Image 1: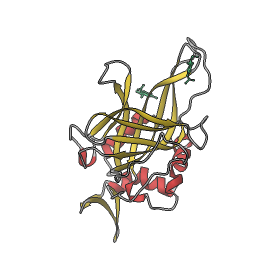
Image 2 (image 1 turned 30 degrees about the vertical axis):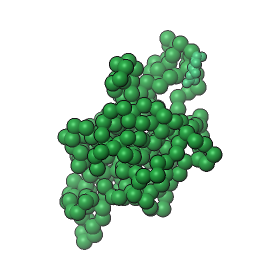
Image 3 (image 1 turned 90 degrees about the horizontal axis):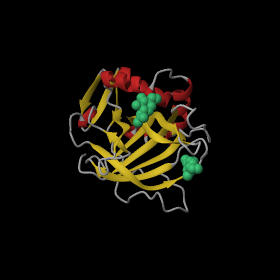
Length: 244
Ligand SMILES: *[C@@H]1O[C@H](CO)[C@@H](O)[C@H](O)[C@H]1NC(C)=O
Ligand SMILES: *[C@@H]1O[C@H](CO)[C@@H](O)[C@H](O)[C@H]1NC(C)=O
């Protein structure tokens, strides 16, 4: 919970932040600690052994976000929920990748997000945009597929805060490359993914891993059940791209 407090509600403390060197620091009394934009050159995400769908590139990763938000679903004619996009806020967790507990931080954030946060994801995103703490890395949402003009594609947008604010190409729109069911609890936790760039310069490849929640009920009644949004948390790690 302390880590989550740091990540999420450093919002308040961070409004009194100053920039120094390559990262953003916050001064609390005499102590200076870096909150965002730390190097993650040596960080290697842990993907399950014995599969070839998700393989971390050998180059160092550039950004890592801990995301909280919703997965949207619509009840389709097969009487099951099919994906209809997602909305999430990504917190820059680059400065805590070596902390004890980082590998399970998604569980803490999920408990917090599902039990203690009564606001919609969009209202939180809007609020954090106003407060503008340095830990906000990006927003994740869906846009019309830019290639076919039909259906939707996932986008990670770095353009509205931090060092990429106003940088037009600081985003990635992606298409699927690989996927595995969550190795933890696949009926509750959404799949892990590897997606690759279709447009944008912030990255050429993104992995979703360490997912918690987000899965819809296994069935629904077409024509009767409304669209649903299911809360989830995950990590997203970004590789490649021409911006840094
Ligand atoms: C939903 O049902 C359709 C038709 O029965 C099936 O092809 C599809 O794989 C199902 N999708 C999911 C997400 O279960
Ligand atoms: C997903 O649902 C949320 C509300 O829960 C809404 O704000 C958002 O626009 C929806 N996004 C998509 C892509 O349907």
